[in-house]
Length: 329
Image (cartoon, rainbow, N blue to C red):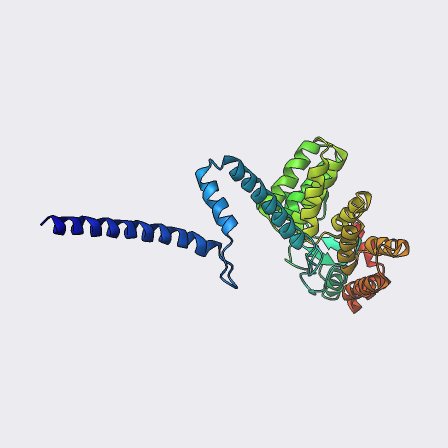
């Protein structure tokens, strides 16, 4: 009986030790699997030991270091995404197309007519064609080529139309009111109008309002000067296809010594037909900041953009002096 009892105690202890060893081996095996090379399966023993030691320590300093690294990586990635959006070539300028002939509008706004009744920008070709039609049909009072509302005959009628558009939350009319307030010296109301036009988020009017706010922050009229906010509004306007804002960003980058970024801005703006940006590229090419190939590509794109704004009706309007007619209307 004594021998049987001794044999049972001995084997029970042996089974217990084997169980403990297997459990320990399993836990270490899981850690080792995580630290193994994915290609050859070899474990880095030093790293396993460091990992065990790290788990025994507080780890607060390492955690702070890891967090700061994550923040730097996040900021770097955010900057990359922002540049991807900023340097994306817009399909057209912020002015877009004439709503009647659907041809791109010229960057020279003197070649178009803003209708106070519907806030549409009509090219001089379509405007002149509408006048001809009304002359042939012996229509006494001219009407809008787009919405066919009778054209205003006095400043009071013009203001009445504009007020109706502002009440309808028309962003073009709102940012137009901001420009008038700015030129009249009422900078606080101008800031309110520009901010409201931006909040509506309506393409061309939004880009123009961003551009207007950029030079308000530049000059500090009505608001304090803020170079950072000025650049922000210039970038938002440039993303919306505003060629002047894009050109101003290029000039800003030149003064900051970032010639490569400046050249990218000038190229994008020149591709939309902006003459000043093409001139800036020519100067950068002479200074060695732009290659001849890049300048030649931008030059051809500039010519194509300018030619896209031309038509027979617009050429005839130029020939008969429709610019003067539009200016008096």
